[in-house]
Image (cartoon, rainbow, N blue to C red; front, side, top):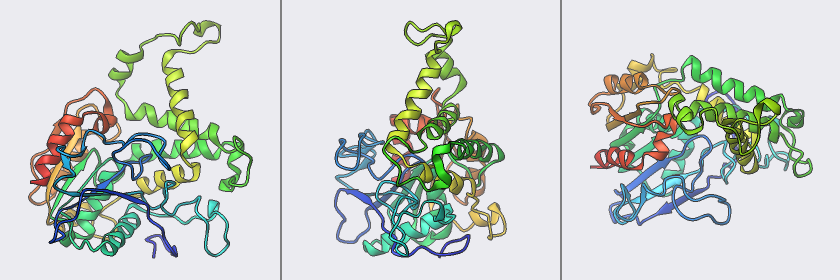
Length: 347
């Protein structure tokens, strides 16, 4: 049953695991991915995964999420396009992709599905729940919705609810996709290869990419440089333009446009206080020992949001600031500092 109404039947969840569950079933750690991530937190590219794991230097033997000590579980999120039920999945009622008929989902719905997965795996209580960005939103929602199942949590680079600017940026990306004539109102799955809304997706990703990085990092990395021998005054591109085009087209090759919309809107709906008397009341439900971390240069999820969490969550540790020029993406690039946060959370 979905928070906004309606229901999804026969939900499939794709997930990966590393390590072994101990005899007392007490060593399982749930790792939750961000918007365009998936269940492949670590490992080489392979069937179903065109890229290496997104936390290669965080998950593995002897690393912060030590697979010699823990069973690490990483599910693809509800609404995703990497094996879990989402808009590209077939609707059991019609036998065709949901497309435009996929229902509105929330972060809370995604966590309910993950809780059902944990129950089916025989894991009634996690050792810890860990996530950054959209994964951090879900880790926070886990701690609020299922406090008895989350004794520890690491919540990185997110807030208690989506801000106006976050909503604005996500809504512009959604509009970019929907404005592509090839989007066909979300029912584009029968089109020929290359005839889907990849242009809208590329533009949406470009908008997002700017918000994920910091102004200083982009300036130091690209400045006013030209792309190769191209001359901007004669119709050529600046290096930053080429960078955004490349990342936009790269994502469009591997990610479903409807999923991008569905997950972006779920992030916009994020509000742990909804129906719970506000965020202060909701965060008081948390029993977990929580480590909260933010990125010093994050302009999408600024440090004031993590400070609010650290102030309002009972027993939360002092906010850890991850120093980085990489902006919001610091939770993916600053492996050593992120690993320190996670190790502290897991002890």
